[in-house]
Amino acid sequence: MARVRRTAPAVALLLVLAACTGEQAAPPPAPGSPTPSASSSAPAAPPAGGVYVSVGDSYATGWRPSDGGTPAGASRDGFAHLVAERASLRLINVGCSGATSAGLRDRPGCPPANRAVDAPDPAGRTQLDAAVRALREHQGDVGLVTVVIGGNDLTPCATAPDVLGCTTSAVADIQANLADILPVLRAAAGDAPIVGLTYPDVFLGAWVSPAFQDGQNLARQSVPLFRDFFNPVLAAEYAKVDAAFADVTEATGAYGPLTETTQDPAYGPIPAPVAEVCSLTYFCEHTDVHPTPGGHEAIAAAVLAAAGY
Image (cartoon, rainbow, N blue to C red):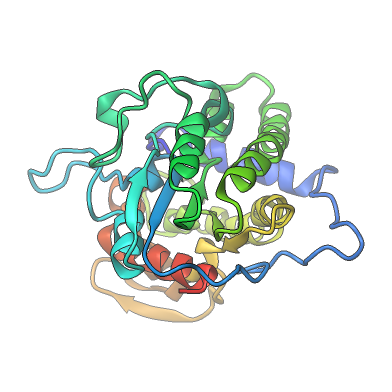
């Protein structure tokens, strides 16, 4: 995902909220299909050892902002490295910071600065092609595939002339692109577990951020955005290919009641879900959507649980 600039985040959230409250909604599951949940579908028991292919955007690469003299860029703090270590899998991370759902399928190459640590050179291949190649090379020895994508698709809508139309179209595009991408990954991965991810509700941080006007109202509205619209759209697509879904929004505390407060060392008494997102992402302090090391720990735990490790 890309960093949200201070001039745009409130607008971007309102755009997506408008789509959430409009007429378009995620299609209902087909009769007899699994109901999406925080960990929808029961993945097959993963093999001992093997490889883990990580696909996606800057969440996949473990991107972190510059902090305390540490340069911005991909890191080993990312959830993919943690999952690989704890599941005893060898990580092949083909993620690319800044990737969109369409770019994952259509855009060849990934600039060196955007690649994950120890990532293979894509050599002009799309990220999807690179993932498929890795899966086929290790056929029968794949322990896990993860996919985190969609956050960057909404970024252009912040300055679009028709903000509602842009956002509605972007969500539909994410859904359509996943419908193309996921069957290809499933065919290459065989019976290996695939886990799709969503994102923390970073907009809860608007509660304490001076970058937002009426930040508390925006924080309140963001909860149904993730819980009732964006995440069900993603979960339904992953369920179609028997992939599990890790509801990272839930795993990072976003669905808790905003009426329950806690004493935060930086912001004083604030809702517990707000304090959680301030701890697990850089959003409250820097208006940056990326997870802290603690945030990646929470994401890794959600992925491991969804994958059955």
